[in-house]
Length: 166
Length: 411
Image (cartoon, rainbow over all chains, first blue to last red; front, side):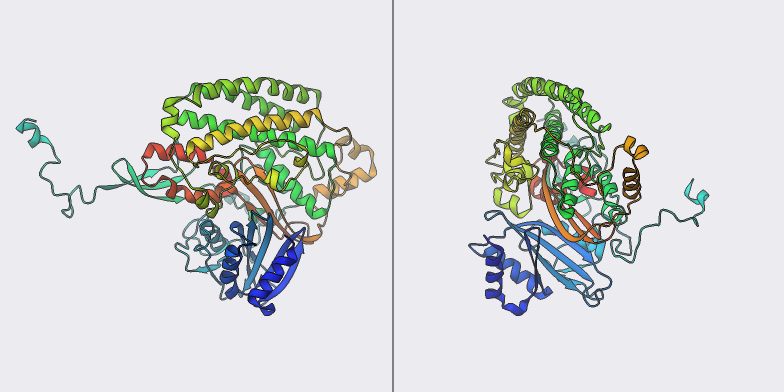
């Protein structure tokens, strides 16, 4: 199956205005869409008798602090095992309203993936059955993978050694 | 029964529906973990039990979360290799080489055939080590200790081959971007040959003891079963998915590192229960041996690493006697080499499923974003569904057969 076939099917179903961007990276097609279109698009890709994107490989959150209005993104890696084609669906939301729809209704695997994205990026998946922190401690009050929390500079000198037991 | 016995029985005459009494609803909570010898790793399961039957389970994960994805955003690419082998520490070389292949894809490095074959051999050795651990410990969990001893010595032998190839045993940091760090030594080749000779014998003894053993079969058949449809929906990969009857193997569907050159079968199960998972892993070990034999027989001559001086650490003696080598050595070690802009996803067939690396590079010296697709993290979600209605001892066996590795789960 060619990538063009997927693009044609998506454009036919959702119209050209629903697809914000199309790219290709090392053979994997990537389609950028709006937050509202994620669930219908994934349902369509899942149910289509030819495309059959029925396997959710991964779901990754990402933070672009400089992209005003679309700082937080989610990348859905779906895989059509029958056609052996991978596809990335991307969508972005502003950081002050990082609400995405949940896809746990379609893929049971999305449960912990979405919890992880919530834990590390603060992306809120509406309708998720149990959107709580998963890998970090429960009382953490920030989302550590966001870019405003840089890791410590390995060469800094201002640390008091005895406080760190060195 | 005599009258006295009736009087002494505390259950007689108690209204179980009565509020506040000791038998309110007969459900009890049991903490399985976080540190429990039978779970082989730091896993907490809060089980709701009705007598011996599990009604519900709730997992807590993240006890050994080490923020690998965050740390990776500040490290030069070559330093991330050491993070990957701390994920699935039962098959570290697969993680290392999966990561190397991801970066090679981003950089566009072509790896010579000999290095690819060497990688295949090391990755299959890692798969053998992983499956030996999983299957023999599964047998131990059902009470069969002896079989474990027959195969575990071969895992030790595999670790000696690792030592020969990289100097380390568990957290291997094996290979480099562009190929391997060193060629097979005579000792390494000799040890692989000894393994190909000896492991089949040990494996046969193990299988003879366990595979058709009535006690083992009773303990594992129809235990922790999952249908193919549910397994796919839960994102299962690797032996666990194949046991449910789906023949998805990254090695055959999306061959990497010359896997297309080798002939091997992808075993599948039918029921997706613990016994099927055991059988699939057993068969995969035979197939791994087959692959190693083919790779060793057809090992091409030539360089064992690509000519990529910007990324491949030069030999130490060259650093002292060669100006270019010294410069590249300095630049690589200090992490002063910019990577091209790009987005890459690469996956390999890890010990327990599809191990994926999603790498976003903004042209800097470190990844902008690195997401590890850890198979264990994704399929461990299905655990409560798989053990509901079974007994506690079945839950232990189910968990053991799923091959969930705490380090991988928690990154």
